[in-house]
Image (cartoon, rainbow over all chains, first blue to last red; front, side, top):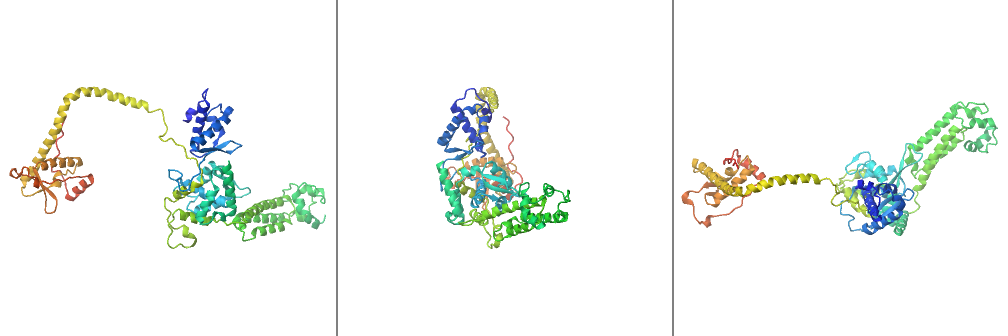
Length: 223
Length: 352
């Protein structure tokens, strides 16, 4: 399919371009790697730059109305996009018919610890917590394989996490934060509620986290 | 300039570098201080021996390095809100700095200060003015319970979580529940896979091959059909007769001894022939040419029916039964009865 896209037809109707771009985005989204506008221009159509705004608007509308998906620009400076679901999952109804991806669980654990600890944590806290869950970054894990790679490379490329060097550390240490995708895709409020369930504690008892989660929820609903 | 005055102004002047606050010192001293990396403190001997003493300077630098190492190695300890170790380090540094005269030592002091302030910032961020604390260890414990950890009965202390069996579906279970927190777009995949334009050519070749023989085959069919039908029925009849002949021969050798049904029909070398034998045998029994009864052990035995015995229309004696056999039972019977060879010799291959 990609081979077809490299050809740039002399005349290409706007709806055709829209369709092509949609398919391109959907396929890129399979691996959950964010999509750059530059790539769209390279692969979909060369004359893209002239009318990209119009095409982009059409694409967003199509995704919204037909698929129930939102194309979100997570990096306005570099024009990088991700696809997220417009529909909120409802508790009690299955999110998908497919079996859960264990990496989702792993990601949830890391995002929770970061969030509950104020938004930034040192990498050791992540590794120590995972070790207690019998996931050792130094050993190959049955389900996740090279855990360190999944966490520091895959999740970072997908923009779920940020893995940043702490300045002035010798030997070098890193810290973890939420990535741009996580900010858009993950509901802090829902996460806090689940944490509350696990601790059998009222989520509001973590006042700072609750405040932040509620604020993010309202602002994301507005956008 | 007296030593005491220099010391009191020391901190400002050392770190100020080329700023204007150096009023009190003469030029030659300043020139030696700027970027002076030398141990020996070369240059005009305007610098007092005390300031220039390489041993003393080395000592100061070594103490600074110790402090820096202490901070780096014991980072976790320093962060612990329960102690004041960070403050102690800063106080030590203050004392040391009183003796610093030259840039090289000052640089080390600056390095220590940077580390200390980083730690200070972290320590401050640990303070939670309100709300409950969050303990990642407890979090891990609750997660393990959620994932279905079967803890051992005696949970001894901290290692209680390293024991116990975590089921295979553990991470799946967590994933399914965590999914609700995400607004992930479902991954796009073609339902029936993607379409490649390559297969057609091989298919055409196959079709062409099939077309050629079918014409000839049609021509042959009318003459052959009759033969096939006949030979099928014939073959069965012939086979049945042959088997009856076999049975009669065995019986003739020893008329008193009943023959075990299983031993007779089973061909230890071929399952399919065994099945055929059973099939053919069933005709003989249906037509009343062979009788079957159970011996004293309850095992089926067969014997040919003598001419006089045949009861035409003797429905009362007739029973029906369905026999089935699979490869497993076939092998079990061979083993149980220790069947070495087929009592019914395999038929000669019919040439068509």
